[in-house]
Length: 117
Image (cartoon, rainbow, N blue to C red; front, top):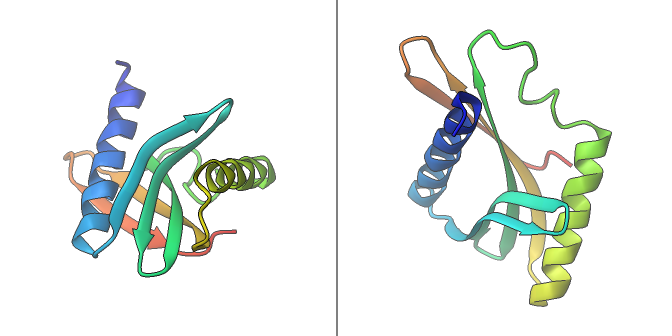
């Protein structure tokens, strides 16, 4: 596994644990269909959260927020539509972002942004 993949996997583990601590039920991790994928699908009350996780080293060239561009937004929507139709989900849905920053001393910080779309 590449260093970038290791950092990404660590970020998803941190995000998953944080969501659980907040009372979310993790429905899926790394769900894929065709060319679409969702990092985390979690349920909280009557809402199904499609959570994009972006892990960056401190000082990286692109912020987590900047990576959610029009193309990524379109991809997330299509993946959610596919998931809903395959599983006949009737919950409200919401798209969220968890931004993980990894610092030089290997510590991390987490920021949760709801309704990114």
